[in-house]
Every structure is written in structure tokens, then in C-alpha cells.
Length: 386
Ligand SMILES: [Zn+2]
Ligand SMILES: [Zn+2]
Image 1 (cartoon, rainbow, N blue to C red):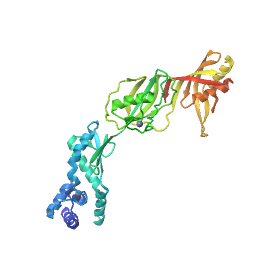
Image 2: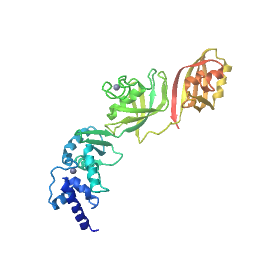
Image 3: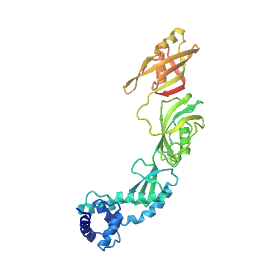
Image 4: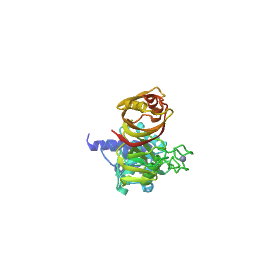
């Protein structure tokens, strides 16, 4: 069918539709633009209105929402002003009645394969906003999502989360690894904790987060740990690896020094990564354990620990799950008749206290030495992922 023939069909149907409903250029053009392979709904609508000598006053579908786009552009710009971004995506919340009227007309006149009013208006906003701020509208993987709400005449902005990897060294004792959540909101974020979900920053987690919040203009972040330690443990060497996911960061391009000192800890090699690896990450630690025993330690009994060299231990969890981990090497020094230091290189995931006392881990220190033993303190010299 020729383009002229198609257009005259469009005029016929438009006449029928406009006899019942007043439509704006955008909404009218939208009903036929795809059929005619045209890109501008507005120009097509204008042309049809002109040909039929019909004027639009108040659009039955959108109530002239397209005329209010400029009003939202200002709001979008001020809501986004604090964010660093290259690409954006526009979303819209329309009154359900607008969507209903759009659906109704499309089904009444059996119009298929055309854009919905929501698609059309978000595209128009994105086009005009892009022109205004010289940034690129995209359909996925956008730095910034801007949601225009026609119901409340407001707009909301949310940026794509950023992922980081790094390592921390804890050179002093008495710093817990994890931060206690804010007592008021239990970690969700509230006015009391400035929406951080934590009210204090006196743990490794708190100190990492504090640095991230300031650097990236963020309010919340989630840390993924490679293994854990006690409040009293030191972490030395290259440090323990961790990942962080930053929610809604305002800044995306920041320069981070090779080593960051955040209160009592040092963060090494903190850098942006594409994504955080999924699932458990195998790792190996070099740990130094300070152990006390009920009975006296003899050279013969402590020599039994040599059996752990290059051996596997079985771990029984309360759930009934059994797992096996490897101990790669052990060495020990007797400090007093009832205490010794045990150095081990071992797979991550062995519960050290249970491994010493003998609960649910086999073989274990207490059984091997036939001497009830207790883990007093442990430090990490190295944590490495493979
Ligand atoms: Zn309209
Ligand atoms: Zn709170």
C-alpha cells in the first residue's frame, strides 16, 4: 500500500476517533506513527488535526500532560544537580486513569502495536532533558534513574550502585569487625542515624563505611567479608579482603589513595570493580593462636599436633551439615606449662574456637593433645583468596 493510501486511511479513522474524543497532537500522532513509519508523534498529530480542521483543547487521554514537560525539566535538573552521571533513564508515574483511558481508546478502535502513553511521555521527557543538559538517555545500565511523578508533581532520583574491593589491616585490638545497627531502626536507616542504619562508626565496618560515605556522597553501603575475626584479633600483612556495594552514590569518579587511614584501620587498594563475585569465595589464612590448657603441656603431647600438617578437618554444623577444610601447615611454641602459641596456614571457614576446644570439629587440638584446651586470642598474618 502506498504511503498516501495509508495516510488517507489514517485520516478516516482519525475522523471517527476525534468525533468522540478530543486528543492532543502527541496522543493522536502516537496512534498512527508506527503504521506510517514516522518518528515524531507530535508532527503527525499536528498534520492530522490540520487536515481535518479540528482543534485540540484538552486531551481526553493525557489531559495535556505533554504541555507540562518543561515544568518537570527544571525539577529534574535540580534533583540531579548533586549527582555525577553520564547516562540517564527517565521513568514516569502517571495517574491510573490516564493509563485506563489510553487502553480504552486503543481497544475500542482496535489499534495494535502502538506505544503506550507512558512510553511516549517518558521518551519525550528524556529527549527534551537530554537536549537541556547534554547527557545521554539510555534504556539500560544507566548511571541515574529519574522518575517523574505526575501524580504528586515531583521527581525522584536514584543512582546505580557502585562496587568496590579492598583490604583492611587492623593494627590494634578491641575493634569489632561488624558494626552494631542503629537501635532505633535496626539497620534500615532513620532520622536518628542520618539514614545510615548505623549510629556509630567504631568498628572495621563502620570505619570503612564512614570513608566510603564521605568519598562517594553515599548514605548506605553493604560490606561482604572474606572471613571474620574477633574484636581482639589483629589483622596484619596485606590485610583481609572485602567488597562493598554502595547504594545511591552521588559521586562516581573519585580518586582513592593506595592506602587510606580511617580512624584505627588502614584500607589498602580500595578500587571500583564491575561487580561483586557471587557465592562463597574460597580463601586461605595464616593464623596465630594463643592457647591455654587445663593439664601441663609435654613435648610428646604437643608433638601430636604435627598430625594436622597437610590434613583435612571435618566440621559438623548444628544443621547437620558436614564440611571438610584443609590445614596446610602447623608450627608451635610452648610459652609456659599451660600455654602455647600455634601458627597455622589453613582454609577459610574453620571455626577456630571449636577447633581448639574440640566441639564439632575433628580432629581437634584438645583431643590430639588429650588436654582440654582453650583459644584465648587469635590474629591473622595473612588472608588470601585463590
Ligand atoms: Zn494527550
Ligand atoms: Zn536508624
